[in-house]
Each structure stands twice: as structure tokens, then as C-alpha cells.
Amino acid sequence: MKLMIVGATGLVGRHVLELALADRAVGQVIAPARRPLATHPKLISPQVDFDRLPAEADWWRVDAVICALGTTMRTAGSREAFFRVDHDYPLAIAELAHRHGTKTYVLNSALGADADSRFFYNRTKGQLERALQTMGFESLTFVRPGLIGGHRDEFRPGERLATVLLKIGGPLLPRRWQINPAENIARAMLCAALGHKSGVHTVESAELA
Ligand SMILES: NC(=O)c1ccc[n+]([C@@H]2O[C@H](COP(=O)([O-])OP(=O)(O)OC[C@H]3O[C@@H](n4cnc5c(N)ncnc54)[C@H](OP(=O)(O)O)[C@@H]3O)[C@@H](O)[C@H]2O)c1
Image 1 (cartoon, protein in one colour):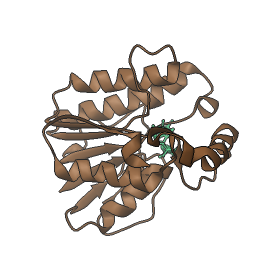
Image 2 (image 1 turned 180 degrees about the vertical axis):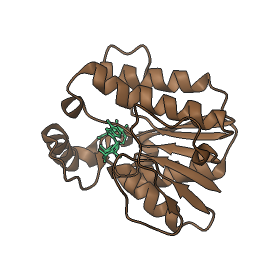
Image 3 (image 1 turned 120 degrees about the vertical axis):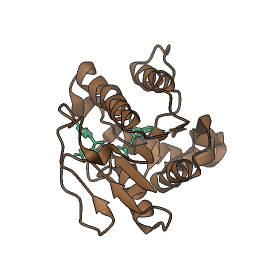
Image 4 (image 1 turned 90 degrees about the vertical axis):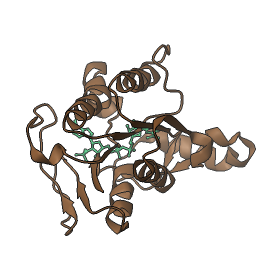
């Protein structure tokens, strides 16, 4: 299969890329990114500006897309900029891939995604999930982690604190609030892409702990 991975330079995306390149069922990986990735014989990584995606590029013709793109409010600097990265980019990618014949889309969403939520973050993820459901993919999967575990170069004080607290209190908490290792999320997403199960599916945080 030909698989597109978006966000392949990120914490979850790096794991998806590693698993996909090692998987015999994946013949080719297309990973559009804004910075270069290490070369691999199975990998094509076009360098793109996500505000100006090349609509007619041949590499949109893939069997499945895995999207692990996203930013933080702190990095984005404003709600508008956050919404553009976490909602508009994944949707634009879905539209272009769908137009070129892609049947399967797998999104790294988030615990609490809800289009009507009072919280901007949850609302953004929920609105994206809702928009994707109108696009006509044969197989659509939302993987909804809680706090993602794994090594980051970037310092995110809120996430560091939450990680420490969850490590201490984790065993006492319901499974859905426990840390979700990035590798578990990546496995669930690759499994959904390869499985191509028809309909809309959700993988909840409790299954990713
Ligand atoms: N952090 C958590 O605990 C948590 C919990 C639940 C859900 N999530 C969601 O899970 C998803 C993946 O999270 P993650 O921690 O793996 O993310 P991450 O490590 O921050 O990686 C994000 C990816 O998105 C790309 N990206 C960010 N801003 C971009 C921009 N302006 N233009 C183009 N590409 C851009 C990054 O590319 P560069 O390398 O070029 O920056 C990177 O490949 C995100 O949607 C996030 O909202 C996170």
C-alpha cells in the first residue's frame, strides 16, 4: 500500500513513520513536511508550505492518509493560527487526497473532541472530526489520546507537570486519563490505515494507555 503520513517530524508522527517504513505491507510512504526527513528507499518526502499545498502533485494518489499534524496555542500564538494548523491543514490534506482517490483517513484527534465543547481545543478537534465525516471516505478513524507520553526536545511546562502528576497518580485513575505513549498511538493509527475497515471508527484513550 501507498501511505501518506502528515506530521511525520512530530512525536507521534515519527513513530508512525518508523513503524510504516518497517512494515512489509507498506510499499511506499509519502511524508509531506516543511523540513527534511532522513532518507529511506521507501520514503518520498516533498518539502511543502502547508498554506500553499500543490493541489495537482502526483503524490496525493495514496491508499491511506495518517495525520498527526498539530501545534500548541503557545507556539501558534493565537487561536486563529492554532485553528489553521490543527483544523484547516488536516482538512485541506483530506480534501486533496480524497480528490485523488484516497479511501482511508486516520486522524490523531484528542480525548474530549467535541464540536460543541465550551473549550476551544476540544471544539477545534471536534469540528475537524465533524468536517471529515462529510467528505465521503470509505474508512475514517479518529484516534483520541489523552496526554501523550514520549521524549520531546521542545519544553512544554504544562505537559511536563501533567506527566509527573499522572505518573504518580496514574494507577489510581481511570484508564482513559492515563498517559498514552506515542508508540501506542502510532500503532493504533497504522493498524487502522492497514485495516481499512469501512465506516467511521473511534479509538479512545483507554485503549491507548
Ligand atoms: N500533546 C498532547 O499530550 C496531546 C494530547 C492529545 C492530542 N494531541 C494531538 O496529537 C497530535 C500529534 O501530537 P504530537 O505531540 O505528536 O505533535 P508534535 O510533536 O508537536 O508534532 C506536530 C507535527 O505537526 C507539524 N506542524 C506543526 N505546526 C506546523 C505548521 N505550522 N506547518 C506545518 N506543519 C506543522 C510539526 O512539524 P515541524 O516538525 O515542522 O514543526 C510536526 O510534524 C496533535 O494534533 C495534537 O494536538 C496532543
